[in-house]
Length: 321
Image (cartoon, rainbow, N blue to C red; front, side):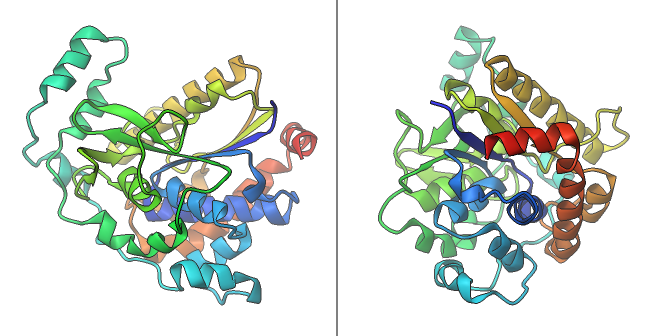
């Protein structure tokens, strides 16, 4: 089949800004239009970016919208879909979420752990059981209902979330997965445990797909792709972490490397964009820090451009498009 896959990982408000910077660089410097990816996998913040790309919004306009810069005449679509105002969120304090009394596991989660222990992830289960947060993500992302129109996009958009009752990953938009309105699938993928309330779709509730994996890149193993471009805002350095935030980034980087290896083992070339020291400094430790997005977009554009200029990376990208 061939083609190009684009994976857009989790990362909150600053993660979405990181996507915008990387994708704008690919569009401007490398001459690739991210909207033309054969399949887009979006997790949490990546689900928003992916949906806007599938709606036809150029990467450059996503970057301008993120930093609240003046939009070009070409951006009438973006204005019509979501306007010019970005939603604002209170600071995210992970320790506060972790210290709230969790729910008891359901019998389905216990059965999953007993019958398929090799698939059961205690960390995912623990996040699924966190007490619901105080903020309504469906209300905060109400603007995205306009993106939906009457149906999902014609080209593949896979949105990852976690089903709360059993801790399993669900990939909305993929053949055979549960049906969901697009705006609710996006909200479910963004429902950060302990911060946002879970999102109800039909008879189930869902939380952030980043609870399972910050990128969920491995869902593309079933696709015969020539190249997969992974944008992983939450990935951190491979060295030993020194604090809670560092541990989260270390874990995200470890999962991303494992999933990238799985894709490569199936014969796909993979290019991974992950933050370096300058990007991490710009992003800080609050996923919801809207005041940081200008610098994040700038550092992401520069860092991604430097990485893409490496001969081995440039050759992979050039061969694919």
